[in-house]
Image (cartoon, rainbow, N blue to C red; front, side, top):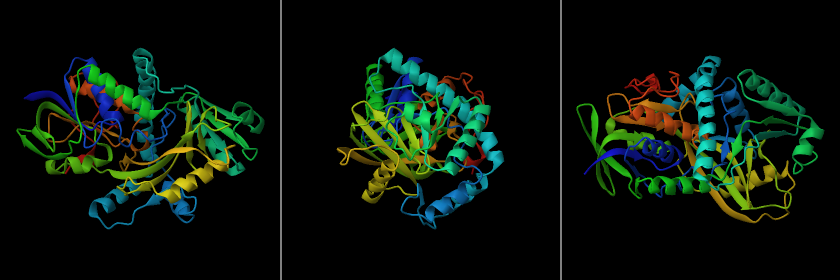
Length: 425
């Protein structure tokens, strides 16, 4: 049986694509190598951050990464040592992209996609009545040193010039609005337009909603190959059988390069492993979603639970939580927050983020395939940018002019079938 639309990947992006395609009247099948809605998107920080408009590849990132790696006990960054040609090529492209020009090209698409996604989150949660600990309280950065606080203020001023609402707090004010902070915290920068939620709850509810809307969900169906002809993907072969579809959406996150390797599409993505630990609510629960500035650890209150998230390890495909880093993330949180002497940890997690060299996601038609749309490469913002991506993909699949026409989002320009040059070859 030939299907209408087949989505490869059932994470935040794949489910969001399904939601908007179903709303437009399309029929959707989702295939995933594991359980739909329970992959890398479920254990992340749950931050919805339209404030994150600076791409990962930016001036000074390489220097900062090298400094962090010299302090392995607390470094928020790590890199796998590998001589793989694809890995080395990605590193070269990433270093080349760490420029002011790259930042300037990336700000507009990340801003527009972030704003669209934040609006869509609010709309979906309200209309569908999702109970997922959603709070629109902003994202508060906490700082312990004058230098880090100064740098945070400078970044806040930069964001403000680009339309991001920002408030800067001195020590008294930051402790007034966030009593869970320790006395060592000297100031904060508050991105007031951000929000947070429980990602696992949101994805579970979205999964059930798209199922109720008529989506066919096929789990444990890893892709094993393709058949193509006349510039179209004709058959997608999986461990659960073969699927024919009019259109195919690739939303497989960090696994995207492996999924489409038979199609000879160059997708320059590397995995970036991150960690989280989730515990029962503490005595002094934080009121806000937080970033602990110097340690780069994210903190998320989720109703009766609290989550810490951190670390970025480039090039590592393992999803096994490293207990050493779980402990270090907890220790980092204890430097900023009033925490119980013993935490009631319910879950530890490791997940993969798909990182492009530029830090900008790939959304658009694949080269040489008229019916294959890419929706991948969102780095640490897969959840945050998912609803906007879903809307754009639905518009592309339906031959409409996308809501966002910024050309620097890879491939999203009117109904063009072109993509970012890094995909060619």
